[in-house]
Each structure stands twice: as structure tokens, then as C-alpha cells.
Length: 218
Image (cartoon, rainbow, N blue to C red):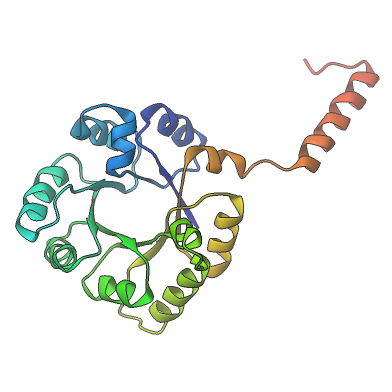
């Protein structure tokens, strides 16, 4: 599974990229608002740090304006992925952009039929929102499983399943088991993947026993 980080915080991105575990970045208007910096400046700086896909979301909802904004955003760097909403106009833009060689992330997916349409439109990534489905009383992981089953039925589909709206470690684990190609994860959740109480307990014991040896490694 690939790991994308879901943030517009360049400091968080630099730290994770230095670890060698980061395959890409996703942003959205809410994350840009939180970063409180010019949007294009943020995307440019992220693309300089990360070699993989960097999702930059359009702010428009109609086809013509989506395309105008997409042309501006994709000039920032070669690894910019244009993020479009899963609407009729968004899918129309997805087809036009993907046919021109531009990576496209179709976002706000909440059903398998929507994911099927995105794949037909040539989406590079489809972003099913697990957490938001869970919040509404629907098992978000079932959507990942359904999309995986559908995509595997058709060898001409190349769209990658990008599990989004991830809230915790179990979401990451379950998405990987369900066959998601990518998980886009908040920095705090990504860092928490390393944690386990038995790891901490074992390390504490080893440190204590080493101290008892009276030795040093120099």
C-alpha cells in the first residue's frame, strides 16, 4: 500500500518525506484554510519536497471553470494531480484532463457506482471517504471492498483506490486488507502506526537491562 499524507503543512510533509515512507500528498480547501498561506505557493513547495503525486483541488464546480483552474494548477509542477469533485462536470473534466496526460484524483466518492463512473472517465485515483460514511452509520470499509471487486473484474481499469477520510490506525489496516492501493492519512495517524504498548514495554526492559550491564557502545 502507498501512503499519502493528507495535509497542507509543509513542515509535517518535510519530516515524513525524510523518513522515506511518503508516496504522495493530498490537500483540500479545508487544509489550505488551516495552513493560512497562498494555495499555489503551498502546492509548489510541496511538489519540491515530494516526488510522488500531489493533489491540488479545484475550487470550481462547473466544467469550464474547473478546466481553467486545472490548467493553472498543473503548470506548477509535473507531479501535480488535479483533484475534482465526483459530479457530472467533475467527471467530464476528469475525462478531458486524463486524456491529455494529467493525473486526476476524483474526490468525495460515497458509492461503488460513482467509482465505476470515475474509472470509466479515466481517473488516476478515486477517493472513497471512509470516515464520513462511518459517521452516517454506513460501514465505509464495505465501499472499499465493493470498489476493489468491481475494478478487479475489468482489466482495462487502471484507477487506483485511494482510501480517504481515515480516522485511525484500524482504518489503515482494514483499508489495506480490503485492497486499497493508497491510504491518505493525517500526519498524526500516520505517525501513530508505529506505536504499540508491547513495543514500548519491551524497549523499556531492554534499556533497563543494558544499563545493568554497565557497558557502553563507543
